[in-house]
Image 1 (cartoon, helix red, strand yellow):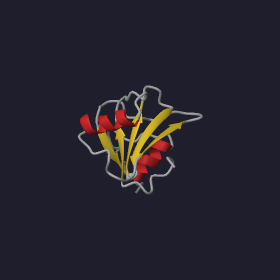
Image 2 (spheres, rainbow, N blue to C red; image 1 turned 30 degrees about the vertical axis):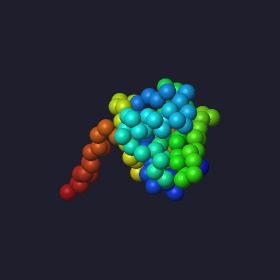
Image 3 (cartoon, rainbow, N blue to C red; image 1 turned 135 degrees about the horizontal axis):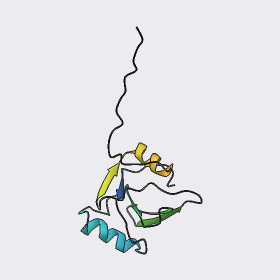
Length: 119
């Protein structure tokens, strides 16, 4: 389920560190209080990562209740943005990058280098 972002209205990542001992109520409260967002909006997936970057938690409201999902990698680490404590909406492509162990939020763009043509 967490390998594919299709079916979600938005995917949000909580940048920085989150205490993963929190359950549904704690994570929903964090979404409301710290990010001023509504955790009860259907189809929005919220992702959280603790200090160990091999484990993430996801919170999803389905209309009749919450799903609390875990994903622990057997090998490797998630490349989680640690520099700020905010929530960011990511694209389905960025979500795939995260699940593939790639950097989601790039600090700067790679410059386009034009090839030189010999005359």
